[in-house]
Image 1 (cartoon, rainbow, N blue to C red):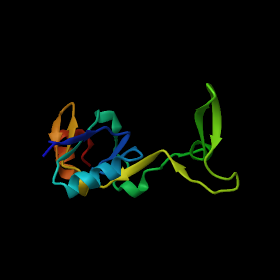
Image 2 (tube, helix red, strand yellow):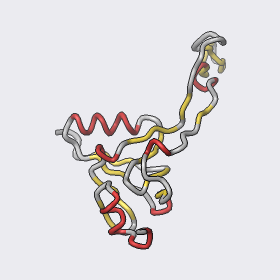
Image 3 (cartoon, rainbow, N blue to C red):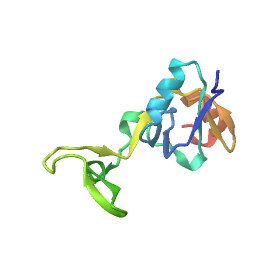
Image 4 (cartoon, rainbow, N blue to C red):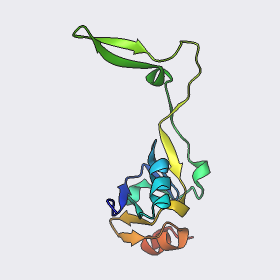
Length: 130
């Protein structure tokens, strides 16, 4: 195919391999899985959160709804702010999503590559084994 692999970063990764990254990462992982394309996450060891095992425990930043309800555009050679929705429209604007480990082919770290599971991660980082 036209794509050999997908590689993304990580803002936070659980000790069991779930990955939090910018919104859209989960959708990329689903598309990769559906098309049999390997999905890798490159991260420094400082991105591991050794206190969190499950991705559902990762706190997700919620940003201002105005970012979704307004956009800048050009009109008559000038920049204008354009309303995309009525002021009263509800909107939720999460900054990150969580990709479950089952969709991750491997984690690329400064210590090597491992599977996205607790056993494999701890083989690279034995100092975090309990």
